[in-house]
Image 1 (spheres, one colour):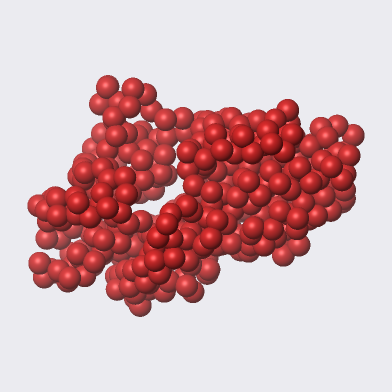
Image 2 (spheres, one colour):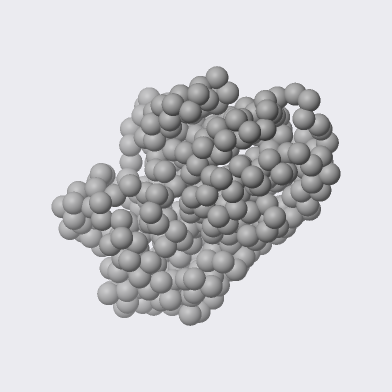
Length: 397
């Protein structure tokens, strides 16, 4: 890998781990995106928090050994961040070079705070916008006593960070661009990288309801924003009223898992709901190949990777109308968030119509063609090249 610019610094607030063999891995970045950073720049540095684990987490990617890590202290709360903020400021100032290209991944506390530093120092930067904080901090999406205040602050700071950026890369085609516009250059490309080769299961689904119906959902269980509790409520209602043999597989892990498992037991769903935890990408794909329908009951999203991957495998999908999901699914396959009754009704209607199942399967296969890797990679490259050119212009410290 060889780049044409000097160095790019990515501010990344996701999980980064180092194992005893020295390998560094993460769940939060696409390997192809990291490779494109190296293709555009001579050096790649990542500002991050580092955790030491005995083995990589399932589904994580190993970062290239050439990636430089600028490690900042770990914090577990807003109060903890306030205590270590001076140290973060010092570390960032010590490690940033004059002609670095800088990318803030939004909307995270670390990126937004560093963005304020950069604007105060009149430093150029770009942003990679992955979610909408106005949805992320809605009631029920996240548990925090200061949720309304956090929502106000994150929305304001995200708008300011985007408006002042030299360029913005969004995971949506139009949704996040409209809510958090950049005054200069805007690019839209999902962070989902789909291969060109067709997997064996990538064909329209055709089946009846004479056997167990396999429902799959995928997402982090760290906070309530994936809406798995609403999906469990919908499943309970459907099993009571439809007589269908419905089975649910939940892929993902986090602090909410134990609570959700207890909730499933309280709804008498323990025998039909399988919480599989964090699994590898290959295992996710196998589950999608076997699924009859994919459901995403999220309360907030950017452009959901799991939904795009399910569509790529031809799985009929139902999702909540949040973030960029209306860019993916027709209105008849969208439901409001926090509405398990409507979710149950819409899902039953789809399952009882073999024609609709095949129709949405075909539509999904056609829609995801625009997410094939070469098209997305070209947009990401243009964004990175734009930042490389801007970084070559001297800035004021």
